[in-house]
Image (cartoon, rainbow, N blue to C red):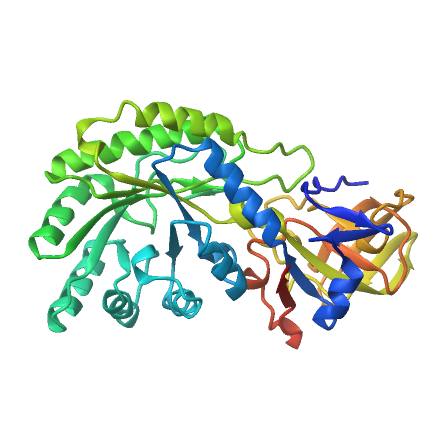
Length: 408
């Protein structure tokens, strides 16, 4: 038997069934027109942002990294809750603007930006986080040809990384950002060219649950930003400090102590060096804001036994939940939090495997999990599905197509 990950708080039971936003899962499926279905709870998202703000320094801005979940209604909701948005492609820029988000609140990072993406960002008034000297040269040339004033920041590749992070974005050779020692020269060039100087973006890693590791990294970010600002020779208008806040996915994971992170950052802000006294600070969070607010519902279409092992075969799978299948950067596959939504209050009685409908042995949603008895027609819930689910999975694989999505 393999343990399941911890089910996030905030979900209810109605008549023995999983309830989301006060409505039973089966009713939500019927209203949406069927399964597979992603359901995102607006109340849980609001609660997460409010809890975060209650422990973070008042001057700290909160940005949403929309790659975590770019679903239109989620973006519209986030537009009422956060201070800024971080995107990583021209497609995300179009999606953000279509959701009614103001370009002045958007920053655009990511290596390999095409000229048309640079132009679209410059003309819209979005802040570009430059990833190289060559990208800076292309952006300045585009702006000069069209008589535009670009809003430019520089993404820094720091010498340090975020300890214990699931994805390390800094420390050593990286395709992201400009090595720290080359930043001041480029910043002075950008300022001299007449661009609107928007500061620095320093992102060291993501999906960390160790508060002390995040505190250490934020301290390193502030120290590096102050040193670079002094060498550049002008005040630093804005510092995107990155994020890294993780959520518990697997058995044994413990929630991040955000109160400790906020208290330490408050202490650092109370003793800022002169170079950062007037700086606007932001953290960039994606999965931490929306990940635990999402549930993936899929229906069991067959129950079968093979060599004594029970398989619950669903109409969903890795084409919608690549991360839960263990095929999105996981070295050793472990079970996400999962449940039989139709029998959410029932006691577990058997070991079963939850699999998808794809013709590949990679299509697994839970291995050897202790679950209530389930039959064809029952609903399965995969939790922590609010981030890197629908948009980060190969929905076109085997012609299956995308899942439905709703915000409730």
